[in-house]
Length: 259
Image (tube, rainbow, N blue to C red; front, side, top):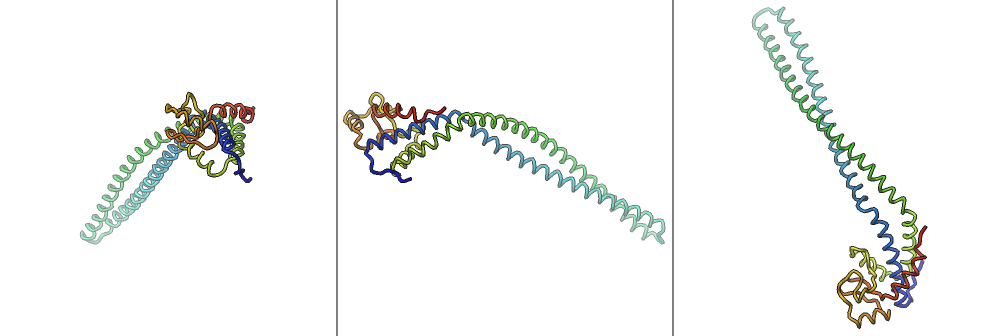
């Protein structure tokens, strides 16, 4: 839809304030969710990190179990060789052959001892990793339960306001189309830079809403005349007069009313 560019400054100010009313209501809806979206995201990230850590421990345990199996196979082979060498010792023809076989038996015995030592070491490491993994899994399960609770809480809040939010988003788009691109960009930039999300404000006791700096009487007159867009030099917000604020607030009550 083409935007209407040939409108008066007053009409632009009214359109801007109307859009501000809509966007402020959207802010209120989102603020009811508080820190819940961030909490949910943080929990998801923490769980993902712990699950990766748990997977690493599981891989290390599997790897060390494989090492244990290798060592057990080595022991079995060594024992078979010892039996073979001992049988051969019964049939030797001289001491030299007997001693050579004895050395082979001794070597295989050392291999068995070393393999047994490694099996015990791997077993101790596995026990320690399993204990750590068990604690990790308990922690992950606790966090997942907490995440489910937080997600349900967030989903309930979103469900309560989803239709109104969708309606207001459509209205925000509709009213944005009444404002020329350059002014709309300025409005959004001011809004993004404001903690309260306010880009267009009226005067309260001569000062912009939320500000302690009084606007000089001459500038207040200019604001009331609605002949040009006036930006507050302290807050950087677009200023409108109280009468316009009251008129547009009354008008927009029926437009943004949602049941």
